[in-house]
Structures are given as C-alpha cells and as structure tokens.
Amino acid sequence: MENLPFDTARLAACAAEIVANTRELSALGWTPATSSNFSMRLDDRHAAITVSGRDKGRLVAEDIMVVDFRGQPVATPHRPSAETLLHTQLYARYPEIGCVLHTHSHVQTVASRLYAPQGHVHLEGYELLKAFHGNHTHEMAIDVPVLANTQDMPELAEWVETLLDQQPMWGYLIDGHGLYAWGRTMAEARRHLEAFEFLFACELDLRRLNA
Ligand SMILES: CSCCC(=O)C(=O)COP(=O)(O)O
Ligand SMILES: [Zn+2]
Image (cartoon, rainbow, N blue to C red; front, side):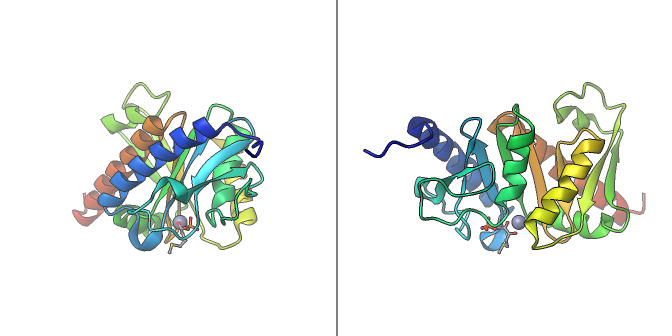
C-alpha cells in the first residue's frame, strides 16, 4: 500500500463528518446549485476538503480529498474546491482552527449585497453574539466584513489576511457570493455559521420593518 503523508484513518473520520454536516446544511437550502465548500484540518500540513463542483446535498466520502496548505492536491487526481486557498490560509495561520465552512444561503447572499457598500454588517445587542467563541456577553458589537467578490483567489486571500491582521474574526461575507465561517471543531464552526445566518436574518427583517 502507498505510503501517504497523512493519517488515512483521520481522513476517513473527517470525510464522514464533512459529509454528514454538509447534507444537513444542504437540506436547509444553504448550498444551492453545487455551491459551497467544506473542510477540516487533518494535521499541521494537510486538510480534507470537498472536490470542486460536486452536488453538496449528495456528497459521499469519495467527494472529500486532501490538499496541502498551499492548496495543492495530495495523492489524488481530483480537483479541489475552487476556493481552497480561503480554507488553507486559515489553517496555515491559526493552528487552533480545525474546520472551515462556506455556504451560499439566501439570507447570506442578500445580506452581502445590501451591506457591501458599507463594507461590513454591524451586529450589536444580540444574546446570540455569545455563540462566537470567546464572547461572554450580549453587550458587545462585531462588524462582519463584506469583501468584494473576485475569481482571483490569491487576491481574495490577501484581502482576508489584511482583515485578519486588524480584528478578531469568526467569519466574513463575500458580496453576492456567500459566507465563510470557521471554528476549532466542526461543531464550533457550525455554531458560528448558524449564528451568522440567524443574526443576518434579524438584520434583514429589521431593515424591512424600517426599525
Ligand atoms: C456554482 S457555485 C460557484 C463556485 C462557488 O462559489 C462555490 O462555493 C463552489 O465551488 P467549488 O469549486 O468548491 O465546488
Ligand atoms: Zn462559493
């Protein structure tokens, strides 16, 4: 058997976790038309990530592949997510990050369009802000960045690096595109993703109500 530079048992466990969670997120309608991508850290040099273009509602373990932190495929003929660099930059920068989730829900997409001109979504006064790791009170505010969309991933990754240098972040929006969120584990990344979704929906409702 080929001597692989990563733990195959760990890959199998991560693939199962990615598949199960992705199916649930897809059932919520957050991954339309093959969009979205998902990854987990394997070790200090490798991540497991979704193969590009797969229907995220019908993922199987074979749709998960390995990349290094430069985004290059490892021991596989498959093509990784077009947005792989946005995952691997986080693993390379923060050893504690174990999971990165990217979805294209309706709420996320509308919020990204609406708040792109001001460059962020301001969230303040919500109890659910405590869902973000390290926050212990609703008496705080966060500005979730909204980046311009581009197909130039190295450029987008550079913009993200600049933002990461400036503030604590649990995620960001890309205009007309979707949301990136991350955490130390799949459960934490999902909690952050779901908190963003809920809070953006509240902000959109308040805008509709003119409140
Ligand atoms: C039809 S979705 C356009 C690409 C995208 O934004 C996305 O999230 C999915 O790309 P991937 O290469 O990861 O399948
Ligand atoms: Zn996307």
